[in-house]
Length: 360
Ligand code: ADP
Ligand code: MG
Image 1: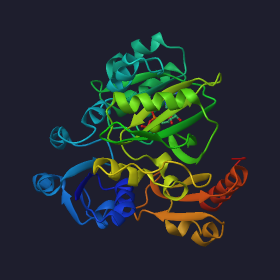
Image 2: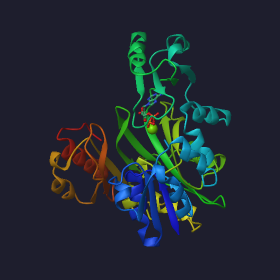
Image 3: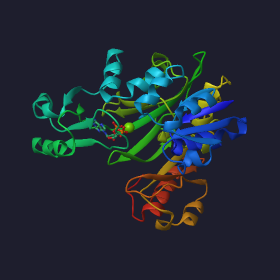
Image 4: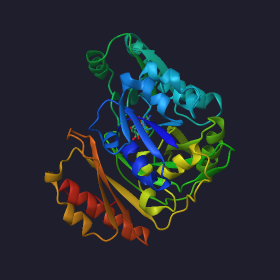
């Protein structure tokens, strides 16, 4: 079978090497022939050669959501088109969730020129996010004083769309990754605790304290979005333990990288099993597992040996050009015991970032 992947980054890279054992061929459509997924694909196509790409592949999965418009239109006959369409606008995504009765933050839409007026309906602080094209905290502004709006207007056009969101003083952030096949069979990976810094995931681990309403939400969202493949759902857990959906992602997710070493079937394998009509694999964990993201570092900035000396670690390096805050690689960690696992996550963080971390 010929699998097409839209996007050339590390999620596509892991999708390919996790599924080589299935003897499929993988074709990547993207910008950069040197990018992680492109380098190990059976063939790389540039966006302008999309016609040849679509002629070559039997099905298509995506590894990111910000797909150029002229390509997006062609995805209608492949899985998850509706979910991907909602993800093109933070407003459409949240409006859909709200209309189906899912818990979301209070939010409203605003053009740049309306921000100063519309923010008056909210108690401060708020988070203002660009409606389109944001990821890893990019295009987001934490506003605690009205004077800070000018900074947004200095960096964006007055005609640009934004979402204004109430700021949630959450107890913690968690996510769950679900998988669903063409027949509507569903499975969930365990709930994971996620720690973000400046809007970007730094580390996570699973299992975390179970939360029945979180699982129910993910089960029903898999059906409502008619997912075939994987769906990640990010939550804020409020101080009273009730969940609010932050966002969803109809694709493999950074908080599911641990599934490569900790689960019987990784998120990347279950994605490909689902779209190629193979039975879904077990989403259970072999052992408690966590992950540390390596952000904005090159291989010279830390010592890989020190990391791999920590028993139970696996090192993944994407081979991308270093940029500030960019996801450059990650470390997966497994241990028989969650407390030991957390100690090891802290040690890995200290190896990578050469500073002390408060207790993980
Ligand atoms: P991205 O698409 O960049 O992941 P998110 O909407 O998930 O954007 O925001 C990134 C992070 O910023 C979240 O994981 C959370 O830590 C913080 N954040 C976003 N929105 C809110 C909010 N309304 N209240 C509190 N924290 C938020
Ligand atoms: Mg997010």
